[in-house]
Amino acid sequence: MISKRIIPCLDVKDGRVVKGINFEGLGDVNDPVKLASYYSSAGADELVFYDITASAEGRKLFTDILTKTAETVFIPLTVGGGINSIADFDRVLKCGADKVSVNSGAIRNPSLIEQAAKRYGDQCVVISADVKRVNGQYTVFAKGGRENTDMEAVEWIRRCVGNGAGEVVLNSIDTDGVKNGFDLPMLDAVQQAVDVPVIASGGAGCIADFVTLFQKLPRIDAGLAASIFHFGEVRIHDLKLALRDAGINVRL
Amino acid sequence: MNNRTAIIDYGVGNLFSIKSSLRAIGAQAIVTADPDLIADSERMILPGVGAFADAAQKLRDAGLDKVICREASDGKPLLGICLGMQLLLEKSYEYGKHPGLGLIHGAVKPIRGVIPPELKIPHIGWNELHFPVDKPRSRIFRSIQENDFVYFVHSYYAADCENAVIATTEYGAQLTAAVQNRNVYGVQFHPEKSGEIGLSILREFVSLTKEDAI
Image (cartoon, rainbow over all chains, first blue to last red; front, side, top):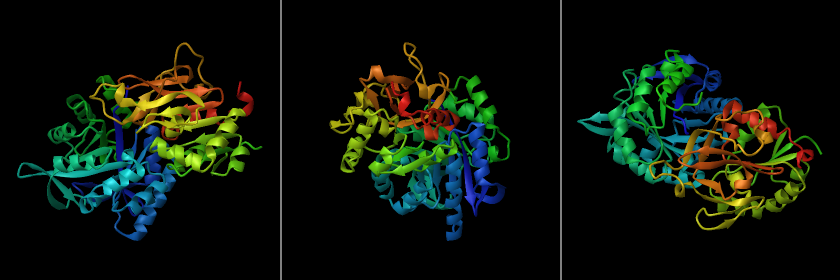
């Protein structure tokens, strides 16, 4: 039986892993290559590398890190951040990425997903959406959660999947960094609207939050988190044991 | 002849991870489209992602279909991965009907036809391997266990190939996870993305030589 995936996310800036609380107040955590290798042996099912660098030097550093990681870590790697063109897809796929996640780039250029899916296949294209409630409506934010696009989120995600995105990462800005559990109502609205895998992101604070996620929303495919893994608050092996004890199929 | 594995490069998919995984297990590998280098290698890996018809055409355009079939019929170990496995079969029904290499009896068919409608397509993620009880364990799976997890990404599967099936996985139906016909092996999953389990399967494959073909 297919298993639920546990995915640590590494935000990388200037060659280091960082994690913001509500996207602000970045603090240095660890060397990304070492951390990736550690997570792979600890039982992570997949890794997400998110490039939050703005400079060209930082971008070069990022692709070097990605290459080194892909040479030593043999689980699926998804790369996001700064993906605005087919050339960006090409750049990270050549360095060993398996999937590429687009966010602001797809908002700026709505044909990017379609072009990429035609060229690399649907399985390669992930739509990552930062979503926040504005006047009771799920609204898409761009630029790392700083810019309100005024677009309704469920419709936006449905459109991206229609254009060829093979997977959805839904990050709730409302619950991100709060550590009080995933945003179940928002996740439910999105997973009902699409028939591709949905990865929950934002809000996990403890093991029980993952158990609740998969019990309440059994069609969600994966749970993603960053700081709780980086700071050792949740160990992946313990998390998977708890999921298995709750009757949820995981790779152990 | 040397102890090298040729990773066949026909312009389909990303070969970075396959090459890296072979390096990680200490195997010599070369990424090539050169028939002489393929002929001079001890074994072959046929990778591939994307659409069947396009990939089969690229193989033929490069003249590599003949090279692969000739070397395989000579007993050289061959491992097809993902779409590379599907290409080993006689035909595919992905967007029409297209001929494959015919090294394994059977046809590639959509998963959608055999699984319940509520299951998502593609079948993507880590799933368990099951080995047929009525057959001896294939050499490439010698060091792994029933229910070990490997990483799948596919929308089509190898059908009508019961005699060649050496492993299955369960996704609303028993789907072919791996096939073998003598020295010709195919895996639907990605061993280069399946952690230690995947590496141990590759380790077994790169220990095979022509002399192992029976």
